[in-house]
Length: 50
Image 1: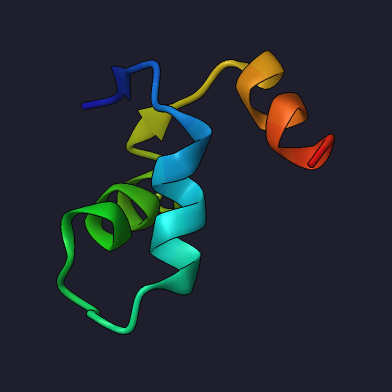
Image 2: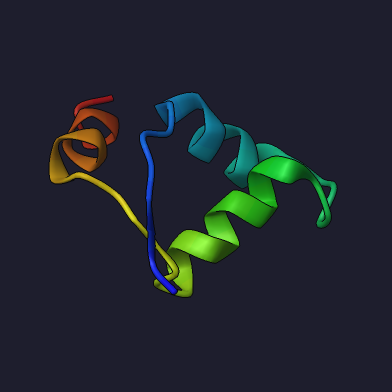
């Protein structure tokens, strides 16, 4: 099943910076990478502008 969600960019930044492999932010990133969660392109574009 595929889910759609709006996730703040800070969640992705936190997932990349954390040292806790089982943190909630890492779990969200894993679901996105696995393709089980679809993100809107403008969310990804806003993180690239950083």
